[in-house]
Length: 119
Image (cartoon, rainbow, N blue to C red; front, side):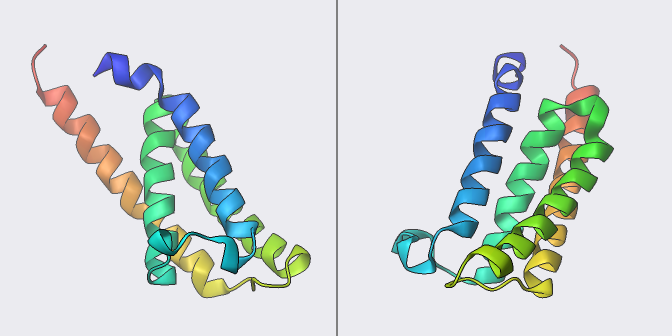
């Protein structure tokens, strides 16, 4: 487990960059394989970011939580301001927040299981 945790900061920042990029490129450029229900995409992406971010920075889990909520809002603002094929939507941001919360719950579960397991 410790070997995997060593790479969590890199994985988190790569994921953050990838989610941001996919959120800002024209919708027609997103591969068909990842085009399914929009709100589910938001929730799943931000849940993954939440889990990896909180594993990467366990002492800053609260900051990761708030930072991801802010980042989701920032992406929606950028979509509205900078793109012609995307629209910033409050419901997308709420889906991001749902994902962040779900990720935090999963993170807490992972941490509690790891703490209960003798090494």
